[in-house]
Amino acid sequence: MNFEHFTYSVKNKIAFVAINRPDKANALNEKAWQELKTIFELIDKEPEARVAVLSGEGKLFCAGIDLQMLMSVKNVENIECAGRRSEKILGFVKDLQSCINTIEECSKPVIAAIHNGCIGGGVDIAAACDLRYCTDDAYFTIKEIDMGMVADLGTLQRLPKFVKPAVVAEMAFTGRKVGAVESKEIGLVNSYFDNREKMMTEVSAIAEAIASKSPLSIRGTKEILRHARDHSVKDGLHHMAVWNAAMLLSDDLTAAFMAAMSKQKPDFKD
Image (tube, rainbow, N blue to C red; front, side, top):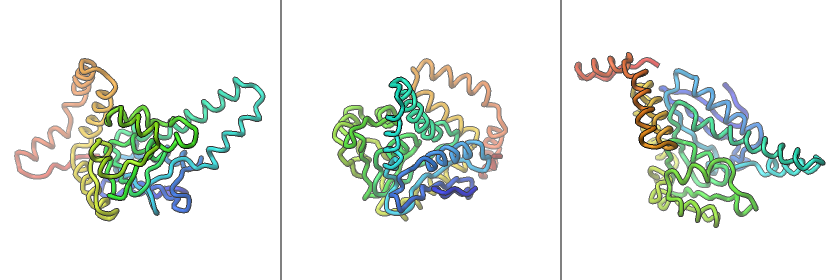
């Protein structure tokens, strides 16, 4: 499929997605947000795609929401009823949240490959990914505070799940830039690399390793990790038991055992 603001392809079981608005610093306008949603809904259903890599074309990863789109919210001031104005803004925010939610809800692991700036809504997007890698010139900033806003698309909800809450609070209150070294130290990224080319090579290798595993097990692992994040250990163990009761006796299990016995690589169905 062709998209106006993204590039998309599937190669060797890996879906490669890149934000492609370099002339706008990869800031997302309304159509770009909807394309983001469409793409990850597509990956979720695409049997050939077992893992996704999300990157950005041009100078930086993502500058967040397009300012023209953000300013268009001011148009609701033309609505006389205060309740209806609030209802309109509520719908606007929840619609954007749903676009990012599709990354987290995608059944396939999503790897963010971040270079240079990851700003505002870019952080929201990165936080929804399963793994994050960056270049050594990368930086992350919760920029909404400098625009008289509260970050509203998932950063404040997701980051404290894997970064110390006090560090997230400092980032959110100050809007300061967090560089690659610090991002690795606080757990915001898995690792960083000297340049974009090396990052993409290493991230592609990680994606290939994931794509070589049982697709059923990879999808199950993402589901269980996501559930465990938001539930108690007891609830998580019960969910795991129910999952395996349904999924354990699969063709993938047989293929893995047969491959181990023959000392060959298993060939899993999509």
